[in-house]
Image 1 (cartoon, helix red, strand yellow):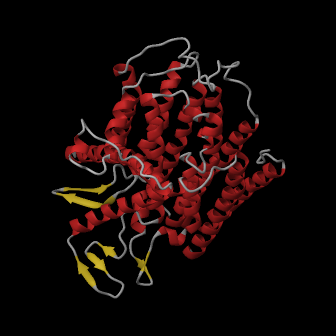
Image 2 (image 1 turned 90 degrees about the vertical axis):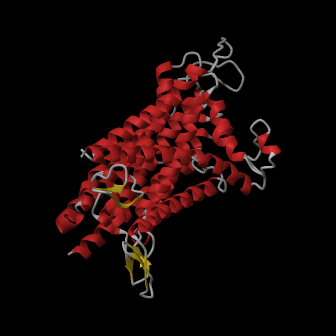
Image 3 (image 1 turned 180 degrees about the vertical axis):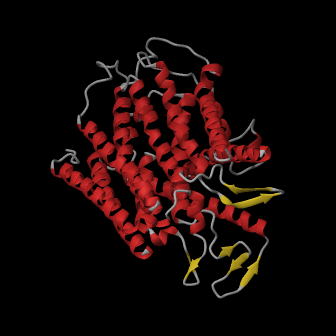
Length: 117
Length: 369
């Protein structure tokens, strides 16, 4: 209870402050729209084509690699917190786990997934 | 019990107010800092109805930043470009700033305080998964940036948002590995417990700060933290020479202010995390609960409330030092190229982080057995 009340208050208060900052312009500021003003900014020219164009597939690759390694970090945290009690057994398990992921990193590296040109 | 709950709520609100104010002052700090480095005067002209000039006050620049700028920003027209997704366009700045603010709830800023029958730590919420909570809430921040770029119906914004997502998730791994190494060193996830472990001395004079046990993790966390806050030299997502302003190109007024505040709140967050993990948090060198135990063996007794106050002051001094360091770096270094940025994150920081973690684990287990 004493732990979760301050977390709840923090979440509530932060949400309130940020929500006010995001919406206040709508309430107090003037609003004069015109078709030209509403154009998305593209260096002064009318936008050429859709903004949601294609972009490099490489970014998806980074996201997939991130999933693998971030899950690794999360799975290592409980072991790290209990590292003294788990001692040699836990260390061995963790080293095997890390080794498997290092193989994955080396593979991605070799295949050029980490290179940008 | 009810009083304890009220005290807990007050701690949470006070911490957030401190952080919001610190972020706003950092904005002024950055303007003056950049001016100092570039040999100009910086934000120095301000007068309220001519009062400043008439009284001959030399420098009211801070009034400009803290009072005039917010008023101006929050009375600007709320601009949403044609074809943009209205709801997501408004949700994005919220999702950017909110998780950063929430993270501060677990940062300890002082020792245990007793008022009457009520004893509490000077931390909004001290629970035993705090390090995990920090990682989790930092991870959410990427949604705000990616959504902001996507919802704007602007190709610069989209490119900035995609760049930002790739950069933030890449450096999050290095950051996570650094935090795991620290957790392995101290064997706890509670930040207050980590700070307590850093009290006391080695060899009679050397403070037991984390930087001595984990210097590499410090460099990793600090570098990855700067990359997470998307500031120079890691400001690829908003590189103004290529992408106008990146993911917040189409934002104005209050929403733009929220994105700006996010930057500075992240600067403050990185400074606080570094302080907590590696520089003893609120620990003052040689200061114990009954006073200073100087290296020579001399004891200078001071009352306990003064010890607590000194601790809080020490925490803020360390935090502001690391904010200043980040501003200094930001105005000293040029920007990375994108391939350099990715190479630096994946081919340097991640392997170093893994190696550091393995060495830490082996040493900790060997020392324990």
